Image (cartoon, rainbow, N blue to C red; front, side, top):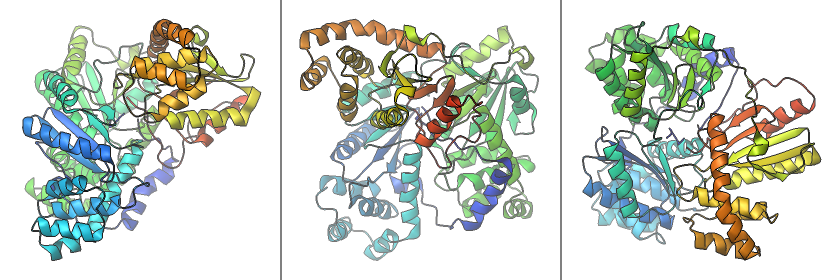
Amino acid sequence: MMAVPSATLRRLTAGLMLAALPAMLHATRPETEAIPGTARGEVGPAGAPVTMIAFTDFQCPFSSRLFFTLRSLEEKYPAQVHVILKQTPLDIHPDAPLAHRAAIAAGMQGRYNAMAELLYANQNHIDAPAIDGYAAQLHLDRKRFHRDLDSPSVAAAVKTDMEEGRGFGITVTPTLYVNGRIFTGVQTESSLADVIGKAIADAPALARARMPDAEEAVAIDPKLVAEMQTAPAPAQGSASAPLTIVEFTDFQCPYCRAAVSPMEQLMQQRGQQVRWVFRSFPLDFHQDSELANEAALAAGEQGKFWPMHDLLFANQSALKQGNLRDYAQRLGLNMQQFDAALQTHKFAAAIAADRVLGQRVGVSGTPTFVIDGKVVDGVRSLPELLQLADAHQKAPMSVAATSEVATEVAPGPVLQTGRTVAGTESAPLTLTWYSDVRSPLAARQAALVQSLIARYGKKLRVVYTAFPVAAHPDAELGAAALIAAAGQERFWPMFNLLASRRDTLDRTAVLQAAGTLQLQQDTFASALNAASAAVQADAAEATRRGILGAPVMFLNKQRVDGLQREEFYVAIADKELKGLPVSQAGLYPASPASGSVR
């Protein structure tokens, strides 16, 4: 997945305002001490074939179970697994923020995991006196521990992880990403060991099994593709290479770091066939990424972009200005020239231009690639990239040969798939909703759709179309249960019930849910059996329309990926009702929105 797992953030801003934003951010951003990843629970080699990113909460009992499971897996796979823990204290757990700060403060003395074990083992006792006792039990320097516990740097580290979690749409703990594939709730050691084994065999990425073909990915204007490929930017490979891959990336994004290795291996093995173009796309909730991008471009001015690129990704938890100067000195750069570039934000405008370019393409999260004039998000595996490069060696594709596409996406034969769950065919607005009820975003999706139904009444028709995400093993069963319940006019109660459950569904659980809703059991069971074909038809229709994650919604012909604020959909709907053209630019909310699950 995607960094995310994966589209996570949309923000379209006027060009002039965006160009001025980097300087404003640097003027107001407090400088805090960088805290290394090992002090924040990071374990294992950064180049390991499996990266596991865990969003956890010290007061969450399920997070406790996952933590000890991960500890066991770290011991079994010391060279193959890289674990990154993200501090994600939920609002419902008042003592969790202090516990997370305590773990990092202990981590500053090399004892993060030891403190975490005590905190998770004693979840009912994580107040200040108890934490002080744990620090004594671990023989920490107590004076230093309390200084770090209350330091701005430790507080900022927790806040950064929380903002990142919100940016990726994390609403429940634990949430685990394994090479971009998302898992929520309790996971057994054996099931994760199976996932790790497959990921090692298919290294380095498990985000998706294959590269979308020409009919699956969304194409963009070839003139914009040409601009992305020819506008000045750091690049590897020949400009005449038959395949150009443009990557929009963020130096603080863990998924972007996972994407580096397969791209580097691709260039080593197929360097004559591929050109790799770097585009900056620092996400708003990564406070150090903007300056890190400036440092990379400043190094590029002295012919050292790619060495700096590698250093920045290798040291994602240490990207403060002092760290950047250390890396520049390590590369033997002219420090006077480098410092001047950072102090004057010489490359801020170039970064802003890349971000605007990405927004024109529709980039909503990182990493995002533009390949053959089509947007492909999430980490790509080396076999996928090699297959793509070899295909171009046999049949190169030029940008000029790519046909132009309309800005609107034809709705397709939605009446042959999906089912109406609100409104009638005569309604002027049709909301075609591609959804996975096992997604952690499902409950929020339902609340949004029901709010729109209440707002527009008979003017709105809602067509539910199943899109079972491959990362959720019970997604197809959940979708079939919804279709079966819809046959007895109980779609919404079933959706709300399944969306609220965090366990893995089986047929018995689904039949019990039907009983809870007082559905006619024999009719429901028969419909459940027959619904499998309908789910597959829905998924095929989604693939035809280039849908790779959920939720995706179409308001008439206007496509919206991910979960946005209600005002976003209202703006589109109101213009549709007035017969006005809908411009995507300017509609996206001004603050981060939750992304789609991949």
